[in-house]
Structures are given as structure tokens and as C-alpha cells.
Image (cartoon, rainbow, N blue to C red):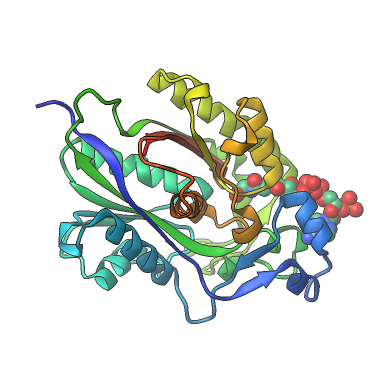
Length: 325
Ligand code: UT7
């Protein structure tokens, strides 16, 4: 039998209702709309209310993706949630999502790779499907980052937001006389020597708390531009595709200046770049599927187009994926 393709059959996302603008934040910390917009491109973010948990957004996003894919809970045989803000230390957020969706017993687990988490999860699901261990996988990036922000640290608290994005990844027979579709190539990397630049100062085994986000913004910025553009070069080479064939660059949404610098290095016109940072801020593992869903929903991203995803974050961990949608 010829090799199965691993296709994104549905995309969905979910955001908390509460919108927090830069002006709202400027009333609480020493910052301004002008500083946040010009340094990061962020205008507003969504922030969860106290009783909302990560699996709530993850479940909503998953329902929408399943609806679009035309699959039912009984069809799902793998649930992976990429998150650094799980509902509980254990069990995984994936099993909370599985229960809320009514998915019968299946493989379910979380992946922790911060802002690169969605790409680590996508790559993992791809491997399960390619080896025949799953047919329909839910791959979800979901975060409630507001729960571990230091609201007195203006250098970090203004940059992040909450939300979730999901895709259904399905095994499909290859099409005849058409270019291969689905996940075409992936690339992942991490370098723990750089962990000091972006981390939380706590955790269950060290402080018994979740800790607070600490970031050396300038260092992370520098690595992000270098590694995100390098990761895109890597997947295009692996798939033997020219960068000029890319229809859409769907990068992690951490900073508009990082996105623009990467697009420039990759010689990708800005009209091919999906940007949602103005509305969502940095939602870590949720940012790529949130951006993907925005552009699929408004009709910019169409079937058969060539997409490239890329991200870098805490770890530092980074990666990319080339997908024919
Ligand atoms: O998703 C994970 C990956 N994360 C990232 O990729 C983030 C990467 N880094 C960045 O996006 C940028 O470095 C930041 C947006 C975090 C910061 O931009 P920057 O241009 O590197 O600013 P900076 O940190 O050098 O700060 C410049 C000034 C400082 O004041 P002084 O020392 O020059 O007087 C800061 O104290 O801006 C000050 N500042 C602020 N001012 C108003 C820092 N935060 C704020 C703030 N409002 N919120």
C-alpha cells in the first residue's frame, strides 16, 4: 500500500470573552498603549476569568475543529494538548479534554515545549499517524498564561494572552496526479543552555508553586529571528520545496518585529504572512493554531495551499512544519 498522507481535516479555536486592551493595562502598571504597540504589535489580548481553565478553551477549539473535519468523538484515537498551563499537574489536560468531549478510551497526553508546543505536538501526532497507531488525532495548543504572569513586571505581563487552537489531523490515502498534501516536513530543536532567558521561577518539584514568567526579552528576540527563519529554511530543504512556493507563513505570534524580520530573511512578502498578534498577544502554544483558524475562517487560507508554521519559545525550543492544507 502506498504511504498514507497526514492531512489537516479541520481547524478551530476558542478565546475567553474578556478583552483587555493596552489602555486597560496602563491603568494597572507603568506602561502605555504606544510602548506596547510599537515594541510588540499588540493592541489587546483575551484574559480568562478566574474559574475558566485551559481544558475549557481546548475543548471548545477541539469541537470546532472536529465539526469542520466531519468527525465525531468516537472517531478520535489520539488527543495531544500542547500546554505549559495545565489544569492540574496530573492528569494531563488532554484527558480532561477527552472526558469533556466524550472521546472513548484512546491515547491522550500533554506536550510541554512552551511556544513551540503546537509544533512538537503536530510532529508527534504525525509520527503516530504515519506508523498506523492513529487515524484521527486532535492536536491542540491551549494556554491560560494569565495564571502565571507577574502582574507587577511590565516587561512581561503586557505581552501574553489566553486561548486555544486545535486541528484534526487525519490519515488519508494519497491522491492520484495531485501534489502530496498534509504534513510534508517537520523540524524540531531545543537548547537547554538557553533556558535562563525564558522560564518560570518555580514548579511542582522545586518551589511547590507554578512560579512566574521571567524573560530576557532582547536575548529571546535575537534567537527567535535566527532560529525561526533557520527552521523554515530547514523544512523547505527537507521537502525540496522552494521558499517562493510558500503561500502562507503562519508564525508564532510573539512580536510583530520578530515576524517581520523573519519574513525579510526568508524573502516572503508581508502579504503572505498571517498576523494576529494585535488581537491575541502571545498565547504560547495556542498562537499558531489560533492564527491558522483566523485565516482559514476568513477565507485567506484555501485548500491545497502550501503553509509553513514556525515558532521559538521557552527551552529554548523551536521548530517548523511545512503543510499542504
Ligand atoms: O513567545 C516566546 C518568545 N518571546 C519573545 O519572542 C519575546 C522576545 N522579545 C521581545 O519581544 C522584546 O524584547 C520585548 C517586546 C520584550 C521588549 O522590547 P525591547 O525593544 O527589547 O525593549 P527593552 O526590553 O530593551 O526595554 C526598553 C525600555 C526599557 O527602559 P530603559 O531601560 O531603556 O529605560 C524598559 O524598562 O522599555 C522599558 N519597558 C517598558 N516601558 C513601558 C519594558 N517594558 C515596558 C512596558 N512599558 N511594558
